[in-house]
Image (cartoon, rainbow, N blue to C red; front, top):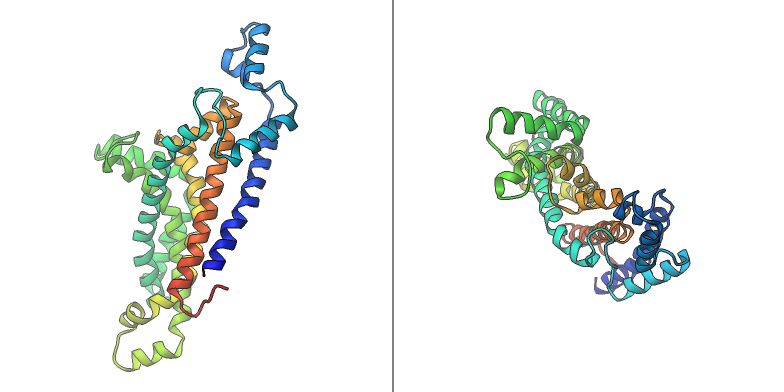
Length: 306
């Protein structure tokens, strides 16, 4: 296990290099001048050139790229051209809000998915299965950009139960978490249902039912753990979608996280900040996948990581 973890940690280096290179190339190919975006179209040409020289944007792209990689090697993500602050500082200030929202979204997804999946998998083809899977399909079908405003209208404007936007206490987190977690809940519920149906056909489940346990009790006591292996895999893979889903959700609810910061940085042509945000998202996804592999091995002792 230790050797495997070391290999995976070493493999993060080329992933980070690839993400940094791709992001650098794309952001510098996007039309628009960050200096003009900062100073305005009416700025004097001399001021524009002076600012471009101060930020190092008048140097060749290869030189800028080498400088950027050199900074990454020592943990320096550069300085934001719009905030005039270190990118690492800005990202560290906004990233906890995104992690909070993603964790809350995952909690909502699991809270919805497990009852639906267990009910559907306990009696496939029955009325409960049809109802649970109908709800799951509905959850997948409604996009965040529609569900978010719908929840805001219902619970904030009409019922006045929850705050409309912003980040504060628990009440501010409910609607964004519901928006983010509903679609993921549908995916997890369908996967759990399928896994439970496969587990139901196993010999040990038939033995448990033959000893007097009800099918649902046998699933909860004996089948659920074995069905969790594929569910854990899909949860780990969907964490990337969950993080990318925060982009839209944070914009809808004015959530001060990394996704909203990234959208603003793209509009301002803030090259260093865009690169820092994308790199943070990518590295978070890699770390989550590594953690998923470890949990997978712990849940299923038959899996041996070499």
